[in-house]
Each structure stands twice: as structure tokens, then as C-alpha cells.
Image (tube, rainbow, N blue to C red; front, top):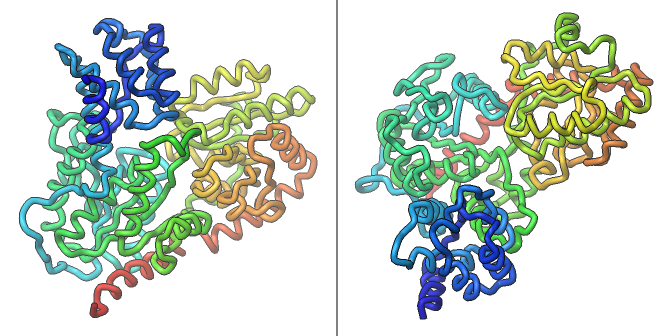
Length: 535
């Protein structure tokens, strides 16, 4: 009966459990894992209920259950935790995991929304052109493609005649820098509101509690700024800032623009992964609820419309480049000397080293092939991140470690000299859903610097850099194909010069940040005009 009650409870309370402290060494645990994978929750519950606390809390854990959750339903695994928690003692690690996962499930429940205290209010905007933007992070406390786009967005929007104000999430920048931020700071003449409740606020608060606390603080900013439009950009999970903006929009009767900068990657077993399905459904709900959806490329726009979002409310405002800042320059001999590049033909990429979507492994393998064939080539990988150590091991194992340079993080003011050092800029992405749809920022900068491009043949990349026009393409994941494209550029320098010139001309006319001013103007006018139309 205990087992059946646990399963019934799990079904009534649809959230999953991830045992972050469960070792995979116990035979009983391996049996329970197999039972869950095979769809036999009763047997898994029986096995787990018999564990002793030391066995379940073994510090040698390797997140085995995280991996299992990619292959099984949340509702199956929750039965196991309730059996364990129903014992005479409650284990703190289980309580923490249960509350964290329940928070994620709450935020993806279509019936849930962050609350705003008090009755609904209708604020008269202080200015019909004031826009309050919600950003997950910003300069100067974080340097990334996201924050570069954000900084240029707000300045471009201002140049288009609007009045942008920015708000960042609860705890930023403290959880990024370790230092308490000021409540309000001005950057390039634009106000940035920092909602920092102080170091006592838990950095790992459950998602639903965090978003509601964020919304309460954000409501104070809305009352103070009295915007005409709320504009939320993608957060760490995609939709979470949009959930906050939509709650504020309902409370204050304001239109919401949702700027979708990324799309979910599907896990290997997405069809059976409840967490993925719930997040993907939440993303669609937020896009449908927004007054307008903005995205980065036609590939992304097509995907969003296919999900059921009306065509007429989806706009493209692409990534761009400051063509004056990123203008062609001669390579700096000091940079070549610092990294011992000599007279080698340098291929490379500038990015963070966090996400496996960026296929640095293919870049390393192609370098090894070229070196083995006697080509005078070197590879420059500029940036840092969580995968750096693993990539350095790959480089050492490739047999061409002396040709592959990891620079680590480079100061922003030195990035141009890195581009100028690279003879062929490579964008080596893996064939994943987000990689097929989302256009990165770096190729624009490389084109503005008149660097010839080599890109994986994915739609998001070939849309901006067609093969033989503004790039050479290679089959994604194919190190030999990438090496062949490099060989073509090494053997035909006029080809590289032609691609570089075509890229520079296109990006300066079609993808300058200034060119986005009329695009943003059209988005904002559309949502305000729609509000003026009688029902």
C-alpha cells in the first residue's frame, strides 16, 4: 500500500526528482535505475525505499540520475523520492532536490504566473515612447554576445526616438561579480535598475519563488518609470523574463514584446523527457501571450511561426555589428610573436568555451589533419569557459598541440587584434536544433573585419554567409571537409580576398546596428497601434 500511495501522490503532484547525491556504485541503485528506465516504478520504489541513508547520500555521486532523467518520465522518478522521503527520517539532500524541482515544474505549469501584489493598476505612461527592457545580464558586469547585442539594442532604440530604460534580474550583478550592485546606474545615458536584495537572498532559490520575488521588485520599477511598453529578452531558460513581463503587463495593462534570442536544444530522448516538453510548451505559451515576438533570423522566425505563433506578430531584428569599431586592420606582429604563430596560416574562432554546440573539436581535428599533411597552419582559439580543459586535452591527443593555441579570456579592447591575426575565421557548429536556427554574433564581426569565413553548412549560418558568396561551407562535423576548405583558401588567396570583401560590403550595409533602428520602430509602433484599435 505504501508503494501505491507513493505513486498516487506522484501522479497528483507532477514533479520530478534528480538525486544529485546518489551514487551509481550500489547494485540496488543500478537495479532501481534499470527499473525506472524500463517503466516499472513500483519495483524502483521498493528498491529505493530499502536504501540506508549512507548508501543514498554517498558523496561519490556523479549526477547519475540527471542522465537518467533524459530517458524517463518525471512522474516515474517522483514515485521513488516519495518512498524514500516517507521513511522515518528526511534527508536534507532529498528535501532540497524536491523543492528545487517542484519550483521548475511550477514555473512551467500553464496555470501558474508570478503574482503582483494588490489589485490591478492602470498607469498613465510618463511618455508614450518609454520602453522598459528586462535583460538577464548586461555590461559592464558581463561581457558576452548577449550583452553586446543588449547594449547596441538600447542605444539603437534610443537613436530611433524611443526612451529605453533597463532592468536586470534579482541579484544581478552580485551573483556574477560577487559584489553588491548600486540600485540604479547610468550607462551611456541610459538608466539601469539593479534589483539586488542583498547577500542574504539565496542564490539557489526555487524558480517559482525567485520569479515571484523578482516580479514584486520589478513592479516597483514599473510604477517609478511608468513605461508604455515592456520588452523582455530571453533569459537563461528562455521564457522566464517573459513570464515576469507578462505578469507585469497584465497587472498594469501594458503591451509586452518578447525578444527570442535562442531556442531550446532537444535532448537525445526529448520525446520521453517531460522536463523538456514542459519547457518547450512554456516557451510557446509566452510567445503566444506576448503582443509581439522579435527574433534574430528568418530561420528562427520560420520555426516560431511553425509552432503556431501568428505570422503577423513575429518580427526579425537581426544581430548586427559596429562597422566603425570592427573595421579592417593589419595584423599586429606582436600578437603573432606572443602566441608563436610565426608565418603560419592561422585558422580560428572567437567565442566562449562553454557550450558543446560550438564544435571546437572539429576545428582541432582539421588542424591536426592539415599539420599531418605538411601544411603550414596554426589554430587560434580565443576565449575561455567550462570546456577549456577538456578541449585542451583533445588538442594534446590530436598530435598537433604545438599548432593549437588557447588564448584564454582576452580584454575587449584587444579583440580586434585577434580577428586581424586570423587568416580564416571558422564557425564550426554541430548539427543541433539551436545551431540550425540561431545566428551567432561573431561572424558579423569577422565579416566587418574583412576576414574570410568558413562555416558549417547549417541554415542559420548559410543564411548570412552563403557558400561561395560570403563564405566557404563544409559539412557540419566533417573535419576533413573543414580541412579541405582551409586548403582552398591557403592555395587561392584571391578567393579569400573576394569572400572577405563581399562579407564586409554586405554586413556594413545590411547588418549594422544602425540599420535596426527602423526595425525596432516598426515593432513598437505595431504593439501600440494594436492597443489603440477598438475591440
